[in-house]
Structure formats: structure tokens, C-alpha cells
Length: 226
Image 1 (cartoon, rainbow, N blue to C red):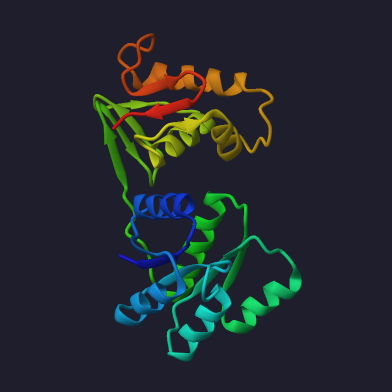
Image 2 (cartoon, rainbow, N blue to C red):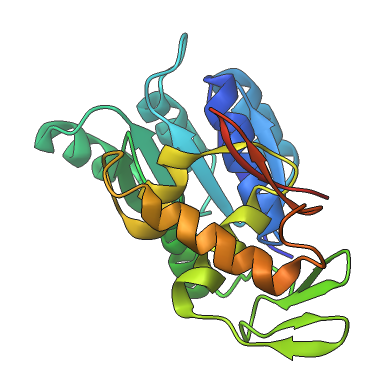
């Protein structure tokens, strides 16, 4: 199992990243500042580091230079709100392997993580099958079963289900689902989401009119129950 160190001082973002990476099968540690990151990285080897640049105290560039000075060779993805070319060049010159500008799509970051780990020969042990109630989802093949019977899923239905599974137990805002699953940056065409949720309930719920697993929280969004 690949080990990843997330260095991020923004608590909400750090929690989102660590949860998503753990769901994807990685072992994840978190440091909220550069000093803590260097202690963790020196005491235990990591396969990849996700490093925020704008941190109090020692910034990400300084931490990265120190990591490389100490002989740490794990690939590093820099996270920053800075998008200027000069800052990117500074990051690469310090020893970064990739650079992601905030705000970013979590799925894109995960793809970059996987690409760097493949390049280095490390892989996260993917969780292949997820279950809730009578439903079983094979994340590798996209096969969905309910009560042991195969359920036909359209591509967007499956993508929506996968995303809700990645946030299982959390309330996911409608706007986030539209952006992450459909790529919409606005609240236009939200009826699309309602329709797909209704179709999904027909396939995973015993009684779609009174759903037990895919719950609507009015004015907030949707939650896939544990």
C-alpha cells in the first residue's frame, strides 16, 4: 500500500484530501506545518508528498528544498493559490514533480497522484468492492449488484454513485455534484441531478419513494448512508 504525506494547514481541505486518499486505498499521514512535515518525512519513508506552498512559518518551497537536501526522493505535488509562471518554476527548481493550482478538482489531483506513483513503481491498494445494504459495487469493473442480481447502470448513474460512495456518510451539496459529475460551474440545469438521483434510487432502493440509503437533505444536498 502506497504511503502519502499531506502537508496542508487549511483544516477543511486537509480533511477532504486525507479522506479521499484513504478511500482510494492509500495510507495517509497529515502535517499542518513544515516543521511537522519534515519530522514525519525523516522518521518514515513516503511514496509521495502533497505539499501546500502557502503555510505559516516555513513555506512549501523551503520545506521541499530541505526534503531534497536530506536526500528524500519521493515525488512531490505542490498545492498553491499562486498561478504565476515564476512560482511554478521556483517549485520545479526546488525539486517538485508536479504543481496544482488552487482551487482544483479533487479527481484531477487523484489522477496526478496515481500517475506519479505508477512512474515510481508504487501503487495504492485499491478497494475493489464496496457494499451498503443489499447493494454491492465493484469499483474496478463498474458492476453493480443488488441482492446478488446485476443492475444495469448508465454511465452518469454509475459516476454519480461512485462520487457519492467516495463521500459516504457526508452531505454532498447539489452544486458539488453538478460540478464534479457533470462539470457544471453553475446551478443551471439542476433538474438533471434530480432525474439521475430518481433513476439511481429505482435501482438501489427497495422502496424508492421512501429511500433508505440515498437521502435528500432539503436545501443542503444528498447523502449516501453508511
